[in-house]
Image (cartoon, rainbow, N blue to C red):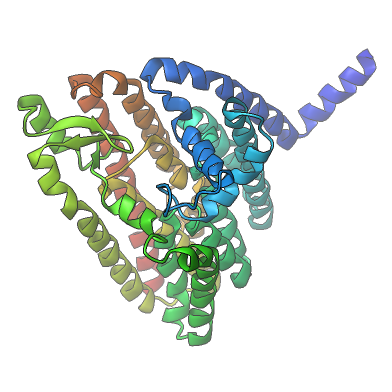
Length: 426
């Protein structure tokens, strides 16, 4: 027995990937157990809060109710398919919490495997993948294991990996699945289509654009047929939300709330949001402003790409870097910025490292920025309990730190992209 144990330990020691998988699995299980601690700190079943609604929505379907028509749900239709497997494996809601985390764990393994293969193909050290997922499991914590953002972000990573291999059709199919699980990947579609537009490859531009739209339409079709008036309710549900207290754009209004709570106060909608005459006056303008900022960046990227003379590999790197900037723009200026959103950018870390190296850009500060963003996001969660009755100075300072971390990362990524574009224009 001791010889077998010794042989196993030797195998683990000699195989860094195996050692990482064991550590990652151990931490995943540990964070699952820690989720109930988060509930005690924040209250309101915060750790499992979203998963409760995943269970409830799936349960409604099995009771014969139609999503969007008979009950509200915040996510596109494919999210319901995502919940189905862990739902069928769970005898009750309590068990569903854990079957869902197993599902997110399996999905995360797909991203790890794909990124390790990418590192092998590009001569990149596997440590960047290890760092990525250790930061996700520690820094994003229970929000990584218990939110559908994990599923969606894995779809995005797999899409980009296939895109890099020039397997465009499956890449855009997977992107469509991501869009129909959680909306945010839709902002990546015009960025990923830009290289085709720049090269005047009209066939590819329209083909892959139509593939994405077609897959989304097929997934949406049963709900359009059933009741076209409610089929897209999840879009209006998001656009109609108030300013979430975790968002960066809420910071000035939270200052007002501390001075005069009659003008701005905290209430519960889909999340802890700001209400009152000032907040409700500002909220309708935030989403159009965010979309305008993203559109302005996309136009900038298109113009700059049109003027570059980069080879295929550099174009792919530039496109990936632009995707990261778009994600940070959305997070930084959107009405909602939940703690789990930071995984959108963290999971791209190995891909960004390769892109930075391709252009000879110093990448060492990137990890510091990602750690700071994850840490400050968790800090806002730690101080959220008191803030739900009224904005506290501790919560306000935590959110300010998160805003600084997010905007600093946005500037860092944009500056790197601009440097890379300049190098291709010389």
